[in-house]
Amino acid sequence: QVQLVESGGGLVQPGGSLRLSCAASGSIFSINNMDWYRQLPGKEREWVATITSGGSTSHADAVKGRFTISRDNAKNTLYLQMNSLKSEDTAVYYCRAEQWVGLKVYTYWGRGTHVTVFS
Image 1: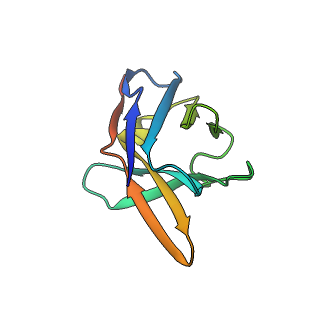
Image 2: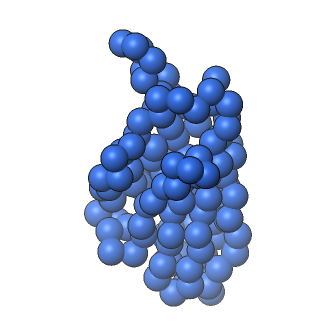
């Protein structure tokens, strides 16, 4: 089992920045991809960014150039640096981890952290 705990959410004005963190604990061996997702009010959860165990990254078009995903494997922590925030970035942000054990892939989710961008 892997436990994921997000932090760093809060209230911020448009144009501001936040850095989200996701701390992984438990049986964290063989964690491969880690991701950020978000769920906007009244909408389905959507993918934001992915980082592989090797450090390759990809970002959704809506956040490309403004958000940056990173990870510190020594600290077992995933990050999302969010700059130039917009009101439409208001959402609950979740981290997700994939763990490969043999031929099986296990997926774990955190409980989310709220980000509110207001003017």
